[in-house]
Length: 416
Image (cartoon, rainbow, N blue to C red):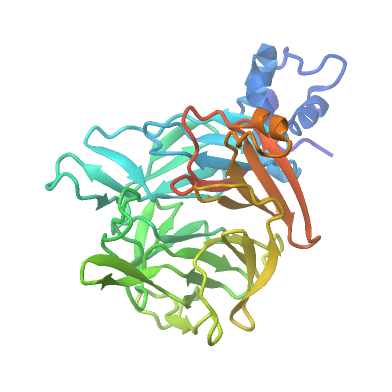
């Protein structure tokens, strides 16, 4: 079989006289090196000049995709990415790698509640809530319309077209078949404030090829703090949960009114004012007399573009959403309930649910205290496989200079 165009580009970058692996043809050696996990490539680059050129090749990522050798990697943004570098974590190899910080804007600070999502060889960072030194009053957070993407080929951040409507805490989903991103709802709430902040209902989509945001039909009502996902089997964009209007307790303390339902847009060009589908409402997802839960929601996409699986983490319980019955059902309970005052991290990685906790030094009265004490400060990850119904766990030492707070940290996954 003749080498692919991408392989030829890699070999051209290496050069005709350079040898990748002594005793092997370069086309065979390049195939072998293409299977090196992404998290280890930066450490292998300094080995020799030919390896540096090979692992710096622009076509390497696409070659790994062709041969299904990509790694499932978690990207964690611990704080404002302009002052605290995000990190990549390869759970399969327990390897960490830092990313450069986001380009700094001298007029804005304390960015939070932004959304990160991967599409192709990029991680997109969209919107958020921040403070602006040019606004008044200074202590009032504002939504952001800024948009960036991290290019793993050049290993740098790129600024892209800003969103039409500034927003943070919004629903977001990637439409991979169209190479587009859809965002919906959101507001201006900041992590420093437990309530207040604006809400919006606007919806727009980003066309990667054109670097352009296009407005779509808005949500039926204001909604922020919501989760979005795409059901490729039916071609529907779902927006679930979140909060809308607020009420006050004793006429003073604001309390959010959380939604118990979801809204769905069919992504087909028809009678909608934006040229796409219109919204329909899905009824109450909780039965009569059943106490609603408002935990973290994650979506497990089907590799065959079938119906996605939706899960919620509420305290130590994991629930699964059944689209047919429009009900949340009990799935499992976390096996090890370690004392934790902060919220838990919850993410889907390589077809498994990852529940993350930062360990603290235990009390001296704890059983097996010496073992736990040695692991204090580690990241304890409990991993659940929904199809096998099995649990496993792993420990890793995070490289963050500050304690990791999963209540404010932003996470996404990417395949490299």
